[in-house]
Length: 290
Ligand SMILES: Nc1ncnc2c1ncn2[C@@H]1O[C@H](COP(=O)(O)OP(=O)(O)OP(=O)(O)O)[C@@H](O)[C@H]1O
Ligand SMILES: [Mg+2]
Image (cartoon, rainbow, N blue to C red):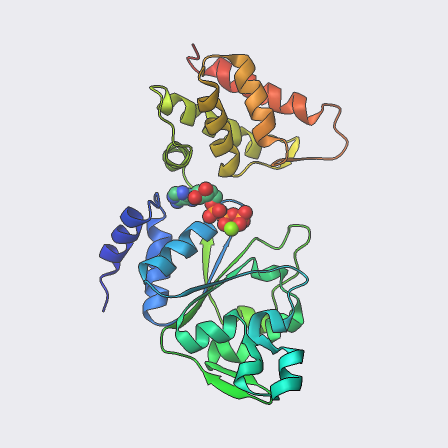
């Protein structure tokens, strides 16, 4: 039996994961009984960060697949190279193993990023590998999964544009771990760490940046608020300006950092730049700025 609390603490320390104690416990628990894990959460909540930390912690091979509508079964499983097949026939040498085949043969983590962007035909090619540990490659071989083969997948909640629904059969084969936004104190620590803030004003820059993105998530004119990446970019830019006491710098940096990370509701009279500017000014006015 692994000591779950110790494992979680180790992961947090080694891979500089801030907080997420409960979620990491769930992941370690699921992994200790060889379950495949699906991490679900909004953009930027730390899905990839956690998945990579887990794979590194278990010190296994890591095979990454980033999904899109164009990801076909052969990109995942593998394919015969036509010129080699002509020269040599359907033999091992002619076959290029994909990440699924490699992870199953060698053992390790198959990391499937944004699995709900995967077309259904590709999803189907995963089914038997996931629950029976078997992958049949016609004309060549049947792979029986190595004992250390496991899958971690991530997905954004299905409300987003450009996302297909993950099939029932595939969902059924995963343990589900949900990530919400972290508490503001934890977000501030993440911002400080990830923006490499080095000035004496690090605490202030991180706290103000967090407040700005927090408001983008609550503002009724904004359909999709900023992830923590917005705050990390904002804090990094402010730090680079060298003067964190300038309102002009804050407004300019916030527009650069947030413009593409937020989505407005339809039919507003204010522009995105105006909305971002007003949020920044409100945050600065409320704080003991300068
Ligand atoms: N708990 C955390 N500790 C440290 N850094 C974190 C944590 N959560 C998120 N981050 C940092 O925040 C940023 C976004 O995280 P990440 O890329 O893992 O999000 P994601 O959920 O995979 O996003 P997407 O949906 O866009 O793929 C990264 O810089 C990451 O290192
Ligand atoms: Mg990610």
